[in-house]
Image (cartoon, rainbow, N blue to C red; front, side, top):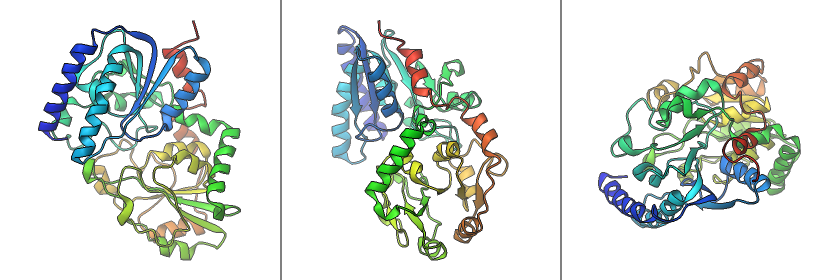
Length: 376
């Protein structure tokens, strides 16, 4: 966002706030908002299910409005944010899973509680405003302000989340990451796996190897990872193994080489559904490592650019001492790890205890207990 765009958008939103802040409050209204995707997923999906099941008396509103980078997309997004500002100023509870402009530029009334449930579990790559190289203006000044509470995955991550989301550490609550509830639900996991296999029958009866790297860069300059030779890996794997590609949903994957992959998954599909079906995960600096750890399944970390990534955006964990999985630097290393079965799962338990201590299958329930309680 340019400074001019920020000035104009914030001016419009502040004017709207002056008007709508005079309107009556609706304490029984709960808003779930995201600027990431146009459908309900991740933490918001799990909270929506828990809230509607336990508190049917509440009015639950969804704001699923992804941000776009073109001029038309930006104007359309700003118009939608006007409704977001109205709901922010008149609702009892407002839940977000990413940055949300109305919250940061204008604040909210004391009767409204704003809670950030960041879309990723754990603290792996540095995020929010806590990056090695400071964000450019105007983001550096306005992003991630005015949260009443931030929900994270474990006691050990509270300091990092406090810095990243500009929230006092006492207001960072280790209630657990709602989306991780799936990994403590055998019936839910089986159903998720069944859905993936039904959508891709060529995976049935095979060992499913998923390559799901995160992005490089930020903003409009985000780009897919490079480094894995899909054709070479496919040639080295036994025929009963299926190689699956899942790129990050927020990058243009049109230039990503998909040769050699048996299946290319829609980038917008729910990652945890795919993890439920996978047998081996290949990734790099993706927060999916945390969810994958809960499954206690083999992990390969392709981190040939580790030194560069430690410099920008930076990492909270030392990959050389703190990480699980088999670490490799190239496709040959990936092949060796998988073909030779070079996986040591002994480190998973202490890793889970430290970084996912509150992710025990009751994260969504704890959230409702803490912010909504039982029906009056």
